[in-house]
Length: 265
Image (cartoon, rainbow, N blue to C red):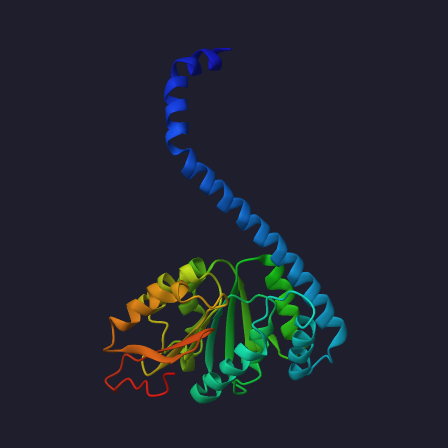
């Protein structure tokens, strides 16, 4: 009763605030609902994809795992990047020849397998995935493809939480103290620029040269506009190396050597 008595005098103010901000409240509500639905659909997609790949591929064969992913995607919704983006990613990896790779957004493990199969024997992949279920299933797929835990590490957290901890994972091995040679961003495009700035702040981008690959799944130019405008404004040490509708490669180079971007499409 006392709560009702206290609330009655506040009703006019509550009604006014609700009326004034109801559009924003409804917008936030719909955004939250959409996020939950995307998460649920994503989990269903990851579970079904994992089950198909696990049962149909040849275990221990990375190429078989990728082919089974692609086979599944021909008739079912899939979160994997697919062969078109995958082949473009392969071209960058073969040119850069990285030994230390960071992947933000693991999804089904498809791109993790593509990356690992092209790394040198001493190469290492650190992949970050926000959803625990997706991270667990993706890790299992990597193991099914024939890779060992000594070659990769899965971090289950947001990219913003994971990035400040990465230096401690690299420092024990002096060969990796320079940072990452290649970074693949395939998570939330709104996090691309904040995460790039944090990677730079934490000195996690190899100063002698690091390729940062941005995946644009929806193929909308506006999704990458903010980070690309930022890169163009810092042409002294970073530039757009390759630009496709579905993928952009940024070349980051802090040392005195000239940044070359002659492969831009």
